[in-house]
Figure 1 (cartoon, rainbow, N blue to C red):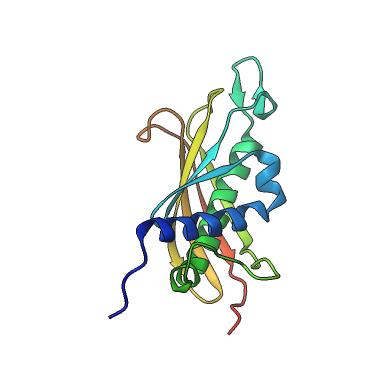
Figure 2: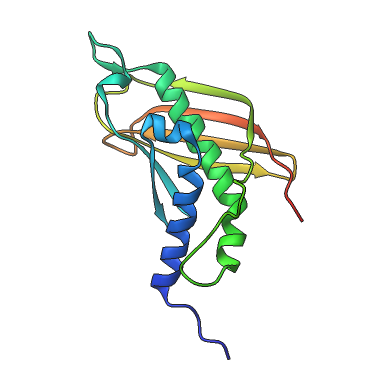
Length: 166
């Protein structure tokens, strides 16, 4: 009977896959968005930066930055879900996306509900895939700052899924 991989090897492989996925998206780097992974669950983190302020009188996060953060969290969550089986089938601590980056889902539409002003501090978001098929996916995203129960924005998006090889 084959011995299971040590948990540290599995964690290293999952972290390598997430790093490879997110570092391949220039907009993620531009916005400074990071992702915290716990098992298969991702939390997007938008570290505070003065450049993200839209209204300096309040001050409040710019609505466009908020929408971009939510949409990015949704797209990365979908891409992560598409890669999950490949990550789990791999062996050893390394994971490679190969010579080409996976094609990311394309936004069909994305609706944002601004529930309150985003404060000048770090923001967090989690996306939940409501439906994912071969061609279409629906995702809901919630964003908060200090208290997970006090959302400052939420969004719903519909995405065209890239064709899977094989």
